[in-house]
Amino acid sequence: MKLIRTIILATTVAAGGCSVLDFKPLGKESLTNSEGHVIGYVERLCDCGKGEELDRVVLFTPRLDRGRVVAYEERIKGGAIFYDVNGKRIGTRYVDLRSRGSNAHNAGLTIVFVPGEPDRVAATQISHVTIEDIKQHLRIAN
Image 1: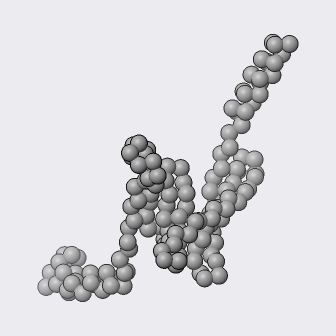
Image 2: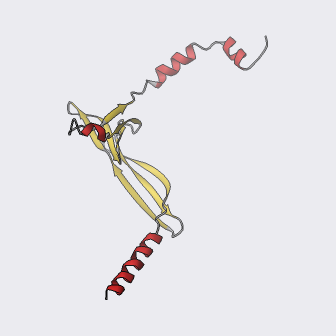
Image 3: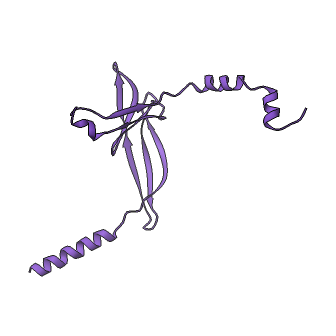
């Protein structure tokens, strides 16, 4: 009886180890709420060998500041990714277990990148370019 159980257990483990899920991403579609904020995404995956397709839905957690939504957070293994209300990635939080010994309620190191205003940055960069700079860059002689 013990031999039969061992054989069944070994067969089950071997069969489970052989079935590998190999999903390839087909695309992503943003989910928006009534305010126009990106609150998550739907990722379409395909196991092309078997012909199976599935949708993986990820919803973000809102980050509030004085009762107003300022960003959204996607939890991932080892931390979180922060997105602005338009769905652009603006920061990351890393969970550092070394600091848990001195501060048990520490949420981890948070790094947020505040994006510059693209129009202002582009205007600043373009305003410093002259015709002579363009000629020199293209190696055009007078």
